[in-house]
Structures are given as C-alpha cells and as structure tokens.
Image (cartoon, rainbow, N blue to C red; front, side, top):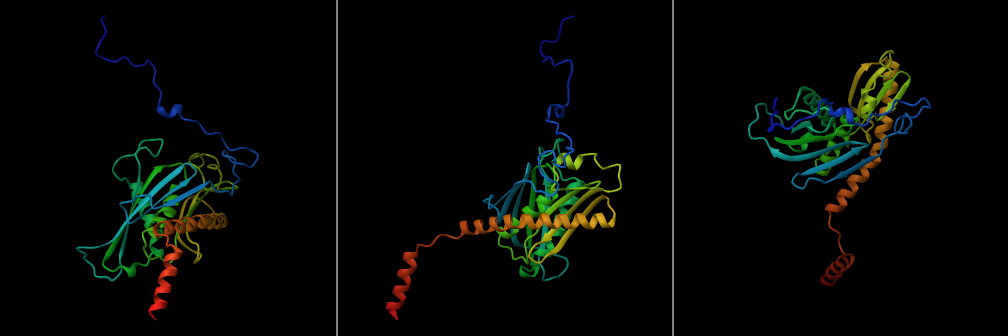
Length: 283
C-alpha cells in the first residue's frame, strides 16, 4: 500500500516532554537537602530594582531558580468611583508565564492566580500609606517567569521592592518567606521538588507556611498555611519564616539603596564649593 508522501512520518513511540527533564534526587539521609543546603538555609537571592523603564517602579528577584518580575504604575486618578473615601486604592495582579511551570499555563488568569494576587495584595496593603494619595490608584503587576518553589514569597518581596522603587510612601517594606513542614523537618525556602514531594504526607505534621513580614516594625502582614499542622508546629514554622524574612531584609535594603543612588545624579564637589564661594561673595 503506498504511503502518504505529504505527511511527515513521526516516531512509532512518543514520550511526554517532562520525561526528558532532569529528575531531582530524593532527600539525603545525612540531614542535608538535595541542593546541599541545611534545613534552615536560604537559597541564593538576587534582587535588582528599576528593570522596567516604562514603569514608575519595578523590581526583579531570583530565589534559586525561581524568577519573578514586578512593575508598578501610578498613582493615577480614578475617574469614577462609587464610594467616597480619602484613601487611595492598591490593585495587584499576579500571572504565571505560560512557560514558567513544567505544565504549560493558560494565557488568561485562572483561579489560583487570582487567589495568589489577593494574598499579595493583603500582604502589601498594611505597608502602604494609602492616605497619601487620595482618590488615586496604584497598580502592581507581577509575572512569575520561572516557578521553582516559594513563588508566593518571592512575589511579595519583589512587589514591595517595586513599590519602594516607585517612590510610593510606605510604613515599611514587606519581605516574604516560606517553610515546608515534612514530619519533624522544617525546610526553609523550599524548592519546587520539595514543595511537590510526597515526603511527610503520611504523618500528622505536613504542609506549607508562608509569611509576609514588616521587618522594621516586626509585624506580620500576611500568613498562609496550607496542610495539617498542630498549633505548636505551626508556631515554630512561623518563627522559622520570620527568621528567613529577617535574612532577606538586608538584601532588599541594599538593593533599594543602590537603586536610589543610580537615580540621583552625582554632584561634582567643586561645583558645590564654587556655589558656596559665590554666595559668600554676594553677602
């Protein structure tokens, strides 16, 4: 029987693209994790502000292989508003890029992304001085470029850095951190494989805890618990998250200082001296 010459012949057997991905090893018995970290160690953090030139403020963060970018626009005037209030409005929208996960995401925002957007909004609102821009609105757009665990914590930190870079008045910046509870082990800043791992599912203590912290005020602005954790274990997990947030805070502060120095032009000391001498001569 003659074949179809116009059809490209494919292989007889096919495999899912995920089959060719690198399979991460399981947790080691020596107490270290698959990437060599201890249970309470953070992944390498990279944070840079002012990456989107068209936005009022922006930031980009990397937590290991997790990559998130945030852009802030506003404040802008709200044309029509039903209720009257002198406080401004903060809007947040988070979207996973279609290529960010092992399984392709949709172009439209799904229910999970809407829930995460609401959590990020609730974490940022206590830190923003909404009464400083009445009848105005600030929009925060967050895009997860690559999700390798702790995407919510990275989004909270990145959005706070973007708001600070935009010059929005804030009581304090917000840092986020997550903990994965696997039985007796608490894995700080879990990776994607650790979040999806089945380790600890058969015991009572297993779940995820994410905390948004105002480091200078030492106040928690957001707390998300997913799983089954007793009260004592949950309290200890929150304390571990707070310690991780305090570890990220110096990196965030140094990033904002560098961003401010780039925006402020350098002044020649000789010009300042000439200006002072001129004023003294006129007097």
